[in-house]
Structures are given as structure tokens and as C-alpha cells.
Length: 126
Image: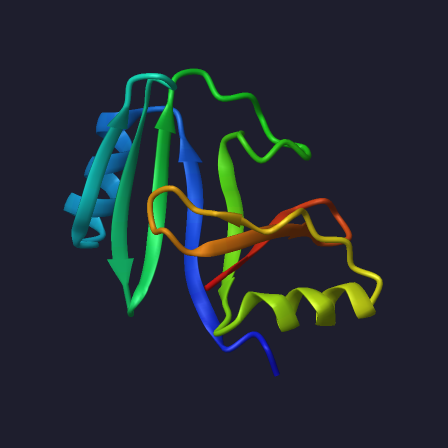
């Protein structure tokens, strides 16, 4: 089986202080990285839970989600794979389309996205 664990879960929020207070102060998730991206005017807070990272994206006025991955709520679910090429081939053999494999600029690992039947973005990440 190619999917062996969850790499990270990404959630989009609209209020920096409220989100940080809830996830870090109230839930007690350790903050392992916080990045402000001035070009996008948003924050990425990387938290840790049970060995799984939670990326909390905080941006002003995110649209409500139907299918857009840059919207309030769950952004995507990422599955860790040892080698992305055979995992992509496996998905494609099942009739599941994947985006081109690319390098994540923050982790320097290869990644790609695909979607569930409802359009929720899912990721493979080495």
C-alpha cells in the first residue's frame, strides 16, 4: 500500500488571533513554525499533533468553500509516501487524475495534488 501515514492537514482561518489562541493556547498544539508571507498577506502557523503537522493558514476574508482550496475550513489532506512516482502511477491506474509533480518550496520535497469525488483537494507528499 502506498499511503502509509498522514503528512499534514491544512486549515484556513480568517482571524489570526482567534485561530492562534484556539489551536495553540486552548488546544495546546505546539507551534513549530510561524511564517508571514507578505506577498499573500497571510500567516502559516505549523502546529504538531500526534506526530502529524497541522498547517494553519490565516488570511483576511477567505471565501467560503465549495471547491476552491484557498477557502475557510479544511484546505487539503496530505498523505505521506516514500516515493511519489509509483504512488502517482498507482492513482492514475485507478483513473484518478493527478496534477504535475512539483517541489514544495518550504520542505524541498516532491508533491502533487488530486481530488476526491466531491472535489476536496488531497495531496501526496514525500
